[in-house]
Picture: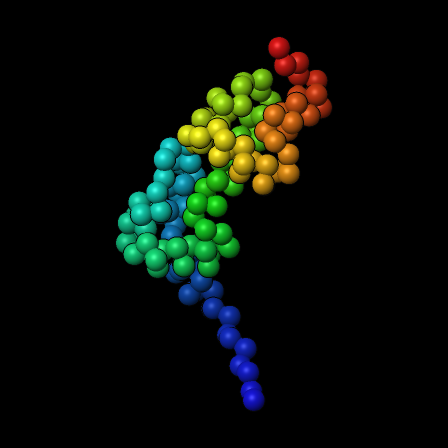
Length: 130
């Protein structure tokens, strides 16, 4: 029984696929702190939600929601490292409407809670939390 190895997409085809979701990627980067729906992103790329989700995951390796949350967590990490703002405020600035969801996502991605992350970062940078 013979198995064929799939041919890698040529670079022109790869570029064409990335270009199809570029409006969504640009929108995510510009509006990460706002509410973003997969339906809205799919519409920007003139794709069905199902097709958009498949293409997005194929290109980025992540679902759209996971990609957005990772970007938001990275933005929150930068704020937590340099600011004494409360966690609830940092979560909101980073685009999380629910602080509990933010904490769960943060701990899943970073391995520690936002509070512990902030405390350690501020201590490392000698910033006193009043």
